[in-house]
Structures are given as C-alpha cells and as structure tokens.
Length: 383
Image (cartoon, rainbow, N blue to C red; front, side, top):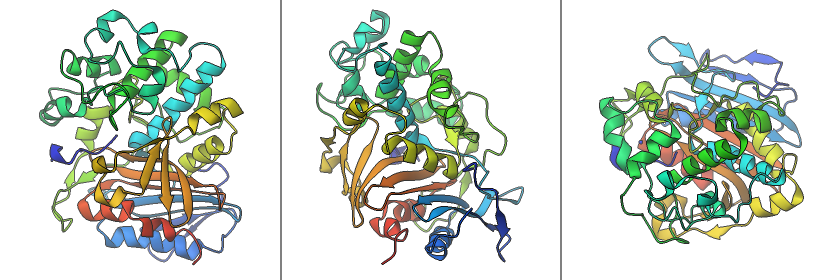
C-alpha cells in the first residue's frame, strides 16, 4: 500500500539451509550463484541502516538464493528466516491485476468496460468518477478516484477502524470529491478495492478465494496468504519517523487494523521473499497470462514526476498493476509495497533474466531511502 508520510503509513526448492556465523543471519540456496556474497552484503546494508529484519530472494540464470538478517520478532528475540512471512503491501496489486486479466480471458469481464457495468449504483453513485471510469483506468490508476488512505488513518490509529472489508473501506470516500479528473491522477488504493468487488461480482466468490484459485494454488505458493486469517510465522512490524532511525515502535496491530479485512487487494496479502520472486518471474515471463493479456499488462502510462518521491523519479511508468523502473541495469518490471511497518519491492530484470525481492519488517526514513535507491538494485548485479 502506498506510503503516506503524514499518517505518523520459501521458494519450494530451497531445501538446503546453512547457518552463517552470525546467528541472526541465514542463507538458503540450491546452487551458489557467483553473486551470493554480494547478495549477503545487501542484507548487511539494511541491517546497518537500522532494519529490525530483512528477507531477500533472487532467481537468476545461475540459480536461486535467499538470505535474511535481524529479527522477525524483536521482543521475543526470534530471528528472521526465509520462511518467515511479511506483509507485501502494494505488491498485492500484481496479484489483483493478474486475476482480473485471467477473468477477462475466461470471458467474465472486459477491462474496457465501465466499472458500473459490474458494480451497483449504491456504490458507484456515491464515489466521484465511479460511473465514468473503466476497469482499465482503475488498473493503471487513471481513474482520478479518491485515495481512501486520507480518510482511514485516524480511525486505524485510534482503533475505531479495524479489519474493514473492501466495501466498508470504500464507504469512507462516499460523497467526497475525487482526487483528479477521469483519465488523470497517479495512484489511488481505492481503485484496487473496486477491482476486488468486481472480482467477487463476476465469480460469486471472495476476491481472496479467486486469487488463491487462479494464482497461489497453481504456482504452489505455499507461503503466500490471501486471507483474513493471519498465518503462522508472520513477523511483527516496526516504525519510526525519526531520521536517525531511533525509537522504533511496534506497528503490528496498526498494520493488522489497516489492511486485515476481507478482499483488501490493494495491499492486504502476506508472503515470503522466495514466493514473491517465483510469482513475479512466472508473471513477467508469460507463464500465467496469454500473449494478449501480457500486452495489456505491459501497456504503460507515464507517471507524473511531480507526484513521485525525489528518490523514485526513475519510476517512470505504470501498467496494469505493474511498475516500470528505468534503472542502471535496464528496465525492471514489478511493484513496490509499503504498509505502516513493512516495506519492500520485487522486480524482474528482462535483460539479466533475474528476479529480486526485498521484504522488510521496518519502516524508517533511513531504511526506506536504502530500499528506494537505484544503487541498491545495482548490488544484485556484477559490476
């Protein structure tokens, strides 16, 4: 889920596990990629920046690698390990977009349709722009629909809002002005809650159930959760606004309150770095969608640079639930993800045929700056 600063917001084949000298660091791999020492340095950099815990996974032509550092639970002194689960935030949007396109392949919807073809007037008449926008405009964030985060934060913090469903959360923006005109705008999590309701409408099932059927089960993503039930081994999360990274507070309950409800396909899923690399690799290499769907998935619109954080100016374009970065290593396709105390990103680099994922149970200015830096992505590749 996209971070708003004002709201003060295992790969199955990894069967060989080796303990490093540091008891808080673990590595697992089937082969030993030549960059493995370099990958471990990335873990070390996040720990030096003040992360409580970090989990990283890589799939490359040389093989697979997963490494972790720090703690999954600081208070109980539980070490982070590759099978520890973290919230993935807006990386969830890749699952949502893939599910929508698969339903289109089955003839259950058309992304060129307006969303009011599938959603009742009791919803669309109360959300500005909702009677005008298409499914595609929700997928690529060009609906202009109000981002609900500005309306939910106070309730999440004081506990009056907890585990809201997609429909309940959307009701918070009823009869309020849009953020932008239809066809413009940059990013609104409300779009993906509307998509969740459309998935439910055309299938008769919860959107979480459909994501499980269409993606999680076929790929055997055994450590990935699209559910309101919190999985075992979910890490705790930590947050601070302090530029020095001090005074980290436990944010676990705030995260659970904010995105723990039914059908939160804007940012509610939970996974491991290893599972996410497998999903992203399968998605971008065409193993999940037809060629026609892939063409739509990778139809990009330009991002407004004035709406991007200064260290994310290289996030040039957005497709259907897909970010396109222009990095020093070439194009990278995937998504970032943030909730209050979690952060991460997962990208496929077509030139190198390499997929990387970084998941953190910490949000602090120093940690996020390192996560966003192009230089951090460079560390995954040989000089």
